[in-house]
Image (cartoon, rainbow, N blue to C red; front, top):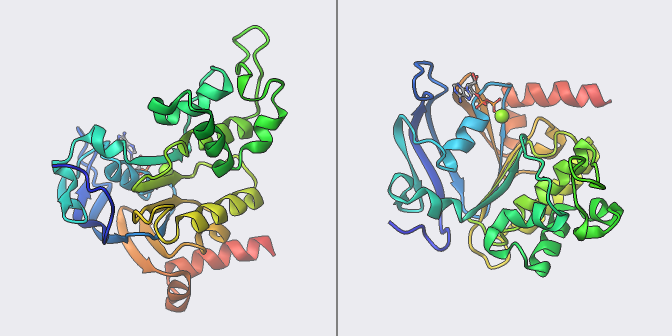
Length: 265
Ligand SMILES: Nc1ncnc2c1ncn2[C@@H]1O[C@H](COP(=O)(O)OP(=O)(O)O)[C@@H](O)[C@H]1O
Ligand SMILES: [Mg+2]
């Protein structure tokens, strides 16, 4: 089946459970959840709670062991993985240092537009990576990587920002995934970046295509901006709501938020 051109309602997980192939441990246990079209959805939970696994199911890197995922009315299981991935964008905690010219390192995020200057510059801007490019001796023409003679070596944070720009090459994704892509940046920079992404995402992207933004972060100052917050704990979904709703419940989210807020005081 074709991937829907736009999202009207959103992405729905129905009783999704998952174990990695060849293992018996249940990593996601009976998760039912709607990611509403146009929303910024944050996923929180301790290390190993299953956040990245959920992202892997949403990006069709794996199929659920049981249960289903639907994109509006289209079962994700029935669409081709490459067609779905062409509609995704984003950045992850683990990224690769592509030792090409800066232009290509970024442009790879949308191979058909690899040589498109306007697209590359736009992605740099959306990712807030302009400062990194400005510091490169030859700008976007700079050869990156110390394995090349004269290649520029970047800090971890600079590589991470270029990876973010790569992840922003596609301008109208249906699903934008940010799985701790800014762990190397300081909390303030992360906050400022996410605020911009959230503003751009609200109302469903530039052309109102209903784009959903999924954001995984350990920083509650960032998480609280989301329209919907999903709390995972030990493979189960334990809470879903807005920051205000979850604070009022005084359960897990409120407790984690309180601990982190106290640490910053
Ligand atoms: N490729 C894999 N094979 C087997 N187990 C995995 C694999 N990737 C992750 N896991 C396990 O799945 C659980 C959830 O991991 P993950 O989704 O990465 O958690 P989080 O992103 O919330 O830290 C962890 O116990 C982890 O060890
Ligand atoms: Mg993870």
